[in-house]
Image 1: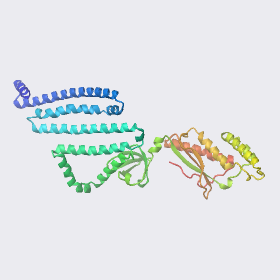
Image 2: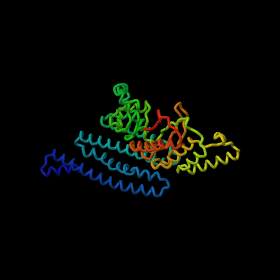
Image 3: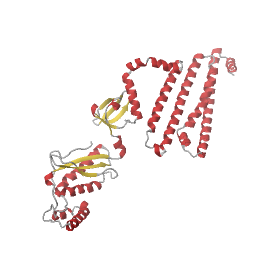
Image 4: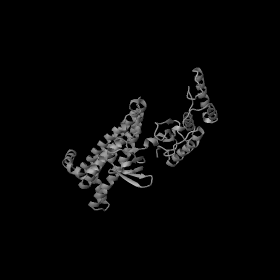
Length: 411
């Protein structure tokens, strides 16, 4: 066929050289068109065949394989095999061009095998995630490790194909110069190993908010490279962190907070111990007017009175028997206030607690989560809550220690 085409072009008046070029061009175009048709048919057939098998089987693993495009990748191997088979025939008179074409097709084959392996591994991951006992296991980390080895083998195979050196000889040659490679590319190797660990352990992603005090970083991760991680701080400055520092030093990743749907508020006011007292009946009656705790004060007063009468407590002194305290009622009031606050996340931890006494007084801490995680809105919500706390203290006849009223908060 090839000789007939050459003769045809020669009969049209072309020289033997140009007739040969034209023949090669026609054969390339023809075989590419045939390969595309075969590829299209193979994809259709394999997809339909796979779908038919998936319907008949009880397991959903084959459905996941189809979702991850395994039949499509397998179908591509048929036209690729055809191209590899006919390449020596097409370029029989052009060894150099034929060698380049053959190496290109082999590289495409290596990459195609890599995609097939990736599709299978991702299908295994997705399938295991549907199983209860594997839901909390780091399956994706193991898949990533396998993919790293697969990519390494693929890269070595591609270099061996390009250079024409047998694969095992190529790998052996790498081992002989490994000492020099380690010495010259020490930082790059450290960064590469660190980037693998960062990826496998899912320690940092682009867009994560991290705090790395050692390097003065506090902001969003904008770029992760082999050697460095760039963080845009909240003041818009850029901090560059060595990638290997992420596995050798301690840093804080706020992704968990972002994913939780809430942002923690953890702040205290310090109450002067000398202002804490038992409540007299008149003071209890006055506090019943505060709507948020009316039911609570009624219920507690009734229980306490029943207890004191049953035990014949002498109430000429308030210390006898059981009593309400202004501090305890205030704590309950704040609990009710937080629980009824529209900006507070009700499905996350929410409490008002008394902390250990200090030299200044007794810290009363509000611990809860705001629904809005945006910094400006978060600060507004927290400020709004503590404006109310500070203003309401006087209604309970309590006093705040003014030197260091705020103990702690998340920023």
